[in-house]
Length: 308
Length: 226
Image (cartoon, rainbow over all chains, first blue to last red; front, side, top):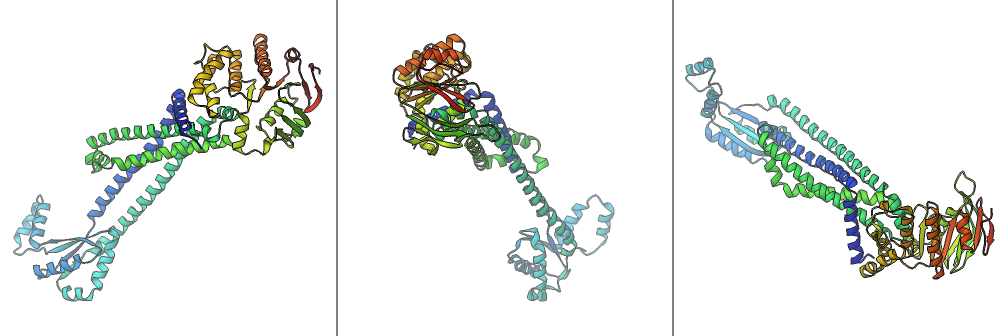
């Protein structure tokens, strides 16, 4: 077993090796930093992608238009019924007057249309309910169960003018396909890039240890135990991981600050705020990956030269 | 102390490097193994150090069959043997002091022992003023003296020197041989391989001659005869 002196010597030796092999250390730290930056930027891409997708999803809804004779009381009690469905996230009531006002605002520059509207005695628009589901895949289910619920329909079929779900259906279906595809593609690309960068890091560290193979042979001839030979290399791997993760975090501090100052309106999300509020999570992932990369690749690379 | 029994070593697609080699080395002996390049000298050394496995035969270090040792016991055995090579085999990223200290560290010596013994042994091989020089800052002779200092620091029972003078000029060769003789006079067994006639004749002790992997002569007070 290694005692305290042995452990101390291993750490000291690893640190001295790191300091003396400046070129090798710098290039290894650089490669690990690049890999970690990859992992970090994939994290941020994922944040942006998810944010945009949720924005798009938010814009999808199902609208129920009521006939002119429907009273507000009946509509509101219908609203309560729909709100009790588990898939529904929110229901907004828009009165006929509100509709009219919205319409006027939307077409305030269309003089002809407004004039035509003014000619009418009655409000031609009717009240509606805007239904948002928790997941865009659930709209079909909500509409179906609404149509199949005989008590709901019997009481209310007279007041419902139309449900625009079928018009939205094509859009919603396509959106679902795109969202699914984007997420699957993102996952595949992420996985491939991470595998590639891990392989590159592993090879770099293997090369640095390959250069030390004669040294390892000498250590064995002097009678060094395997763990005593392996130890300093693993300590070096730990230093690579530690330094690289700190550098990566600093780099992304700068990048997100820049994005926050210049791109917030384009992205629709303040990346710097997001980074700061997730700082410890991200640091955990980056630091963990850095350590794992450094230690595992050092361990495997030295193992090759320690065979009897 | 060391017993080789019918040892053969054949690398695939090559003529045998060693063929049916049998001899014994007694404790306290100074034995020179001579022969042309390719006669099998270095292979012999590798087999004794368990750096290679024999194709046939056994090598014993006292009662230990060196090729059946587990990793842990093998490192223990290697600490009882000091080695010196033609290409020095120093640790390039460690200075003279650290090269010696490393050998003591792996043998489990304390920091106090290391800081008192290392300057002493470097003084002994005339490197007292180059404690913090790295191997690339030392001359060939100095490197070899450093390697010898490392080999003797843990008071091994045997020193194996594989062509230690191969890269040295006559003056450094003479010095290295004198140091090896002194080590032997103090009771350590020395195994020296060389193809340098002058070296062998200046030692005047047992000589084993290898030719094409076979022992062709084994003389007390031998000379270099091929």
